[in-house]
Amino acid sequence: MAHWAVAIVGKLFGTSGIRGVFGTEVTPELALKVGYALGRSGVKKVVVGRDTRASGLVLQKALASGALAAGADVVNVGIVSTPTLGYATRKFDCLGAMITASHNPPEYNGIKIFEKGTEACVMRERDVEEKVNGKAKMKAPAAEWNAIGASSNYDSAIRDHIEIALEHVDCACIARKRPKVLVDAGNGAASVISPYALREAGCRVIGVNCEPSPMFSRRLEPNAENLADFSKLVRACGADLGIAHDGDGDRAIVLDEKGQMLGLDAQLALMCESELEVKHGTVVTTVEASLAVREAVERHGGKVSIVPVGSREVAERIERGKGAVFGGEPCGEYVYPKAGMLADGVLAGLKFVHMFCEKGKLSALRATVKTYPIMRGKYAVKDKERAMAKIKGALMKMGGKKNTEDGVRIDFSDSWLLVRPSGTEPFIRITCEAREEKACRELYSKAEAIVKNSVR
Ligand code: MG
Picture 1 (cartoon, helix red, strand yellow):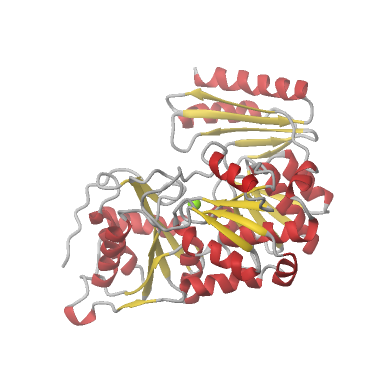
Picture 2: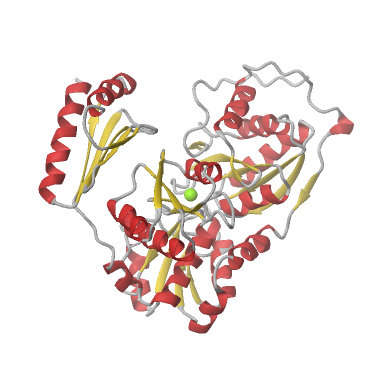
């Protein structure tokens, strides 16, 4: 019987799976244990993939080894985007582990679990955590020598993902227009798929930082600062649009022909409109969604369904509340339920290309999205839970439509307010947005008074 005495204290999984610095927080030993736990979860198969980080291969092999030792078969997909791994778990109707730290610096790595085409639920994560921490009694021993799992490769994982993505955009429309598209994968996992998918769709593609490499040429978080050079290139090349990905390709950030980022709220609002034009229904988004998103959805006769932060939450709500046509997080993670219940940055990029081909310059489209005054602040607190309980009590006395699934969000006719504890830091955060500057300030002051009173 194998013994996995693990000295991991506290919660293993955060909102984006396991994440930490390689060697100290995320070790080969931990990957082996997670693989072993997955192999003993009652499924026969585990798909294992990784992004382009230097520590990826070590962790992938360790995790695969654990799963094999537990008697599960392992399907290796190598360097792939996170959505590619997700689709593979749907194809094989099994579990999957993606070795990635998304947009974090190169010394980080992590493990994200998928199950049958979607991010694994909290229950599954808890089960893995218990097995890794050794709290749950292991009833069966590790596999005997003749029951060790079989290892194979799934070489067409990327090809199959490209097919799925191309099926869900109008390639004839794109091929007629032949747009010039710059794509920046930050040398991450999207390097091996996004430029190829765009090319096949009929775009003229210029790849920037599209050599898969552990030496990232830019910081992987696709924000204005990190995309400053890319922005200049989009303009200099006379491209019709630019698409930038994070390290594992589940996000797409879009730049117009002037090299300007559309902005996270505006690009989400535009995508909501575009999807609702095809089919009416509900759009699922998170507590951080802006007024622009609400307006775009309401203008097209749709309904907004608000969920806690995280693409898993978005996908879960789409699946439960049948009829949702699209789900998106303001960070650039979009879920297209017809293609799959996961955030797919490759497909999102293609969808924006199609938007350009159908409707014209993205700068002009961007100009149709109104943006309003927004205020944000954070307040240090020792006991987040205690403070939040007090804050909630006070906020519930205010008017408006309340949602308490992730902090407290209150929607008024011309504004909204969100007070939620930070997931990783000892802070309570306030966000508010209103159509008028004065109303925004007033609403913020009210919330600030409540928070200050409660964190004391
Ligand atoms: Mg990501």
